[in-house]
Image (cartoon, rainbow, N blue to C red):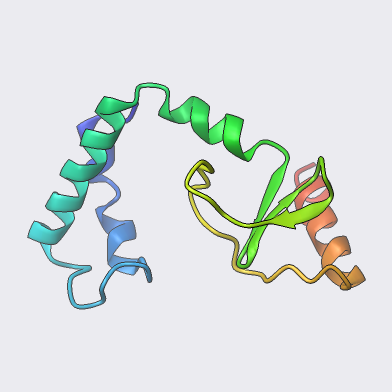
Length: 111
């Protein structure tokens, strides 16, 4: 699990996170409270990293759900999925261009 020092490094990401209230993003007290909450979650669940891998394996995050490569369909996000972030692109099953872009980024650009 992440150590407290590593969690403190997330402050710079909190400042830019659009999911957090804009008025509170830069407040040290607000950030400290979030860090305490995250530490509590991680301490309660030592297998957190394994859950990230196990619950997202063969799934590609999109803004409107996660594409399951095994079933070849879009599934809704749920509390059992441990994606660290939702995708920024909406999945459109009719878009051949999107399929090519995802294939390129996920498989070709890596190598």
